[in-house]
Each structure stands twice: as structure tokens, then as C-alpha cells.
Length: 123
Image (tube, rainbow, N blue to C red; front, side):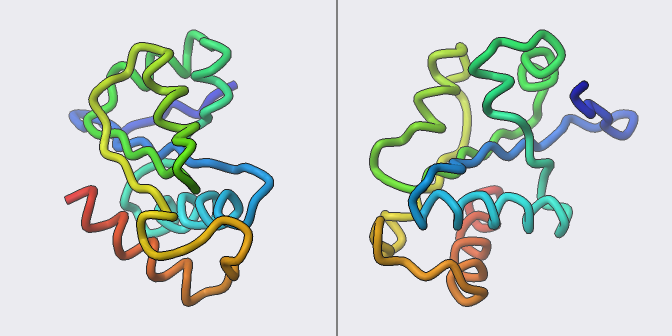
């Protein structure tokens, strides 16, 4: 069951990330989890959007802001959101930040770089 809790009077800020097999997918996932811990937004279930799970769709429809974090230029996260009818979201693409699929270290330095950029995008 989706945790759809939001404080009274607030619209959720939801974060959807790539979690693909490549290094940039792993980096996307780690960044989304870190942004959640930092209170920037709440990581949410992209598979639930793809599967059109009612509670997840309802929460996503009511979101105040949505951030899609894609690992690469395939834009899988953005495409999943668009296919589900969500056209209004902010978009971060790790390979647009000077990192390359297949040769990016998933280390704290890169997590911090991408997190910083995502925080800027969410403002």
C-alpha cells in the first residue's frame, strides 16, 4: 500500500527516479532517496504510475510539484509520467550534467553534484 501521507494544507512534492541497471540509474535512485531524507520531496513509485495503481495515481495527480530524475537520454521516467497523463513536471537528466552512462562512479561526490542540481531545479 502506498504511503500517501501529506501534512494538512500542503501539496506533495513527489520525486520519481530512474532505477535502471546502469550506473546513472543507480545514481538517480540514490539521489532521489537522499532528497527525500533532506525533505526536498518524497520519493514515489514510478512502477505504480506505470501500472496505474489507483492510490499512486491519485497522489500524483494532486502533487504540487513533480521531479523526474532520468539517468540518461532515453528519458524513461519522463516518458512513463507522460504516458500516464502527467505533462507538468520538472526534469533532471544525469547525462546532461556531464556524466556518462557506463563510466560514472556512484560515489558521494557525484551524488552531491546531482542532488545540488536537483535542488536548484525544484526551487
